[in-house]
Length: 196
Image 1 (cartoon, one colour):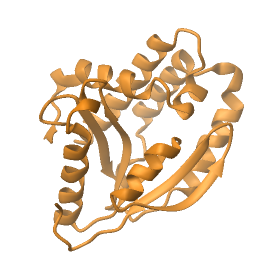
Image 2 (cartoon, helix red, strand yellow; image 1 turned 30 degrees about the horizontal axis):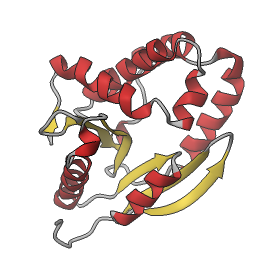
Image 3 (cartoon, helix red, strand yellow; image 1 turned 180 degrees about the vertical axis):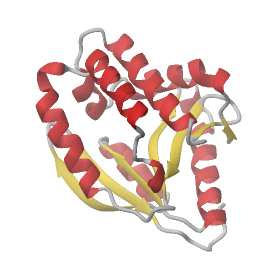
């Protein structure tokens, strides 16, 4: 796993679009109209915010991406809030905006971790990468980093199958909320065990 460079942005966006096209949380946020364009706007925003925090990582085969950074870096600057507002207006399903605001606020309140724990914002693998060892490489690299830094990993997923996979890799589900989609709040505790 390698820290992404600015010129990797288009590759990250493509992976995001392929891996999140069927994600119920993302589909709720964006709606169905002009979905490809809206996903591109959301992915571009995610990349820009995370890149400033040194939080975008590509698998060595460039078929998978992890966006993660310390919990204390989640808070947005004034300029980033303006960028977020622009993205919301252009990409989100505005007919649901009040519901989206309430749900996202609740998710932020439930999310728990220490300041230096890493929040896994997005984790995705391209269609091609699903048939390789890309996902496993990314998971192991994340765990190695967590072990080295002695931190927990904090994540959410709205796909039950992904929850099961996360749990196989040592994550625990500490809370579940049900909206028009489920949100599984997950964490993987710091361990001193060797990562295989």
